[in-house]
Amino acid sequence: MKILVTGNAGSGKSTLARKIGNSRDLPYFGLDTIVYKEKWQKATNDEIKKEIASLIAKKAWVIDGVSYDVMNVADVTVFLDVPRRVAYFRVARRNWRYLFKSRPGLPANCPEILIIPYLIKIIWRFPRRIRPKILDRGVRANAGAFIHIQTKHELDEFLTSLQ
Image (cartoon, rainbow, N blue to C red; front, side):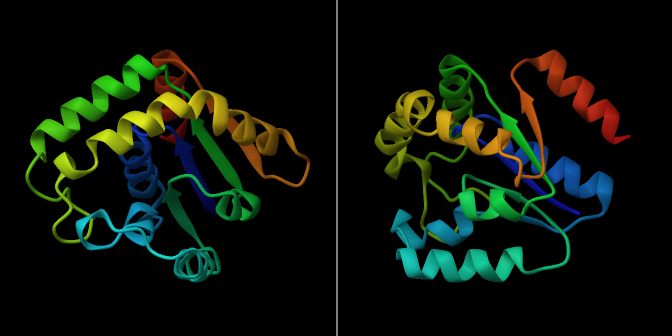
């Protein structure tokens, strides 16, 4: 089984992907560890593509992040489509805990304080720039199952279905 959990920054991708991985005994991978290097420096497009190709070639996985290459091969894509205010709140809560240190699963020297302005832009632009592309690819026939979660109730129902 290959599952992608995608959505805006602060949508809960990592949390849900870990829960899915644990409940289905699937290895979990976060794309942030591929995209970012020390001090939030971005990897090159070639480096990112190579690492993603290596991940998606594996037999089974749960991956969190935004990647159309991953989405194209996933058996299931779960799109966490939360309002901006929710994403901003969650990012602020997360950033506070890791303001001056790296979150678990990120490269060294990636304190949240260095990425706050970038996250603000990502969250603001997501509904107009990225969301339509995810929805468009999600309804394509060649994509796997597409689960569009917009409310806490839908998320709770999905989590219940995993058990």
